[in-house]
Image 1: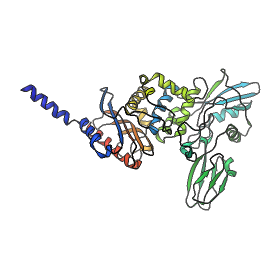
Image 2 (image 1 turned 180 degrees about the horizontal axis):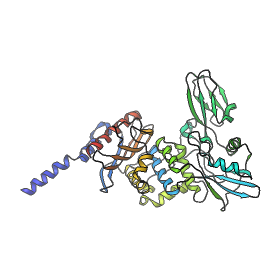
Image 3 (image 1 turned 90 degrees about the vertical axis):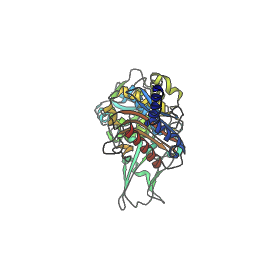
Image 4 (image 1 turned 180 degrees about the vertical axis):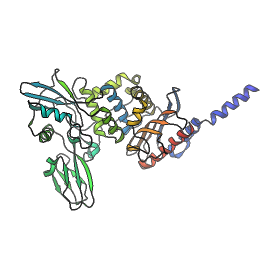
Length: 423
């Protein structure tokens, strides 16, 4: 009789457990069943999965992809970032890009390379021969070319491969870099600036209120050399010279964590893509993102990522496919390479910073995570601190919904608040 009483008590306790209640929410609440929802919750201290719902189903991850790119950076890059590869031959300095994205960047500039090139007595020659990739990633939307989140891929980015326009009524439009000043014309329509798809001609409508707009420019080796030469006040000539094995690396001065922080908090796509190129530059110097991706694919997660689909660094591609369980393993792998203090400083904090600033969740943030969104997609994966002080790993993925992203973000915040309270 006593055995049955203990068994009955055990069943009651299990049925009332927070995990079971939340699993019922995921399977029965229309907030989570009116579209495809996946969720995984893991306790790293106990090495135990607490909740798994559609954990092995594949979802479009959007910018959750930046978490695996972050891991690639941790595995292939040091604290200093490679800015160029170069050789000195007689009176010539020939240099090749590494994908380093901070040269003359409008928000996070690295001036070390400029100082290096200014001081060199040789003639300057730039070769783009170590990059043969496309300007866009596979599966990117072609009609995003005018949006700041779709800057082009390049071996030697300059100004973030963006033109910044600042305007106000009755004031001339500010343009940076200034070499594009003659490329802007006034046209009909709104005040937003629109670039020609195939060239660097820009049209702006009548300005009715102050604006700041970053528009990607069409990158070319000749344009990059011209922009660099204008800043250095000395010629930079483009040549097509293969990268020799004897080339040396010059490193920038901005630490890698500054790049990671902006990539994770602002969700900077351009930084994400070029982290992979820099990782490749550290190996054989050829700027093939797949080289850096293979380091992660071959050396982590026991080959799990090979069962998913990882296509680009930023998550702009809808070809990417990850599962919630894969993202949990990914978060574990990141935790092995970076301290909790470092991670919580780099990731957006809900209610405080980055893309989670609007996700308020109390006086002290308890969610440190990377979001990812596009039409019909909202995901959030990262670290959650419970009221009891436990740090749990979670991944919540929503695909194929017709509501607004802000509505699904609100549902996600509400669900995670329950975990914070109950675990």
